[in-house]
Amino acid sequence: MDVLGLGLFYEDLPVGRSFKTIGRTITETDIINFTTCTGMTEVLFTNHEFQDSESDIQGRVSPGALVFTFSEGLLVHASMQHTGFAFLSMDLEIKGPTVAGDTIHVEVEVIESRRSASRPTRGLVRTRNKVVNQKGETIMVYTPLRMVKARTDGKAA
Image (cartoon, rainbow, N blue to C red; front, side, top):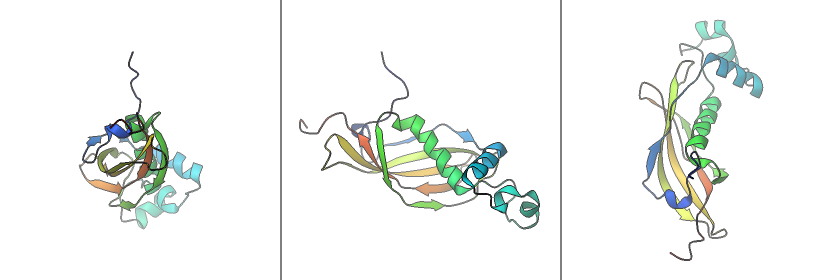
């Protein structure tokens, strides 16, 4: 019997493959819980008076770290269960704000895929992850390099 929700293997992630995750709405409760839990109690995230009088962004602003974290959570469910072994590096660019009520999803494109030389049962896969809101605006782009499980050691290929 197939098990749904398992991650993608190295062999499933050739250069050029693309997919997107389901969406997730960021709530005011998410923002308050995240900023309190992490200690990111910057007034931009926690003070309505400051937001109303000083901020150029309308609404309860979400930290970029929360958007990144939720994006990674969406990807765990979509592609990494049991097959993702290491997050090795990334570049990250925030393109625009996210506020309470925004719904995000992640659009993924594989831009690098190679078998690990030192661990042939693993692959190194870099993706370009675009975080997109409900208006179709790209709000974040990041390019993680991950070590993922391979089905084979590559010797039979």
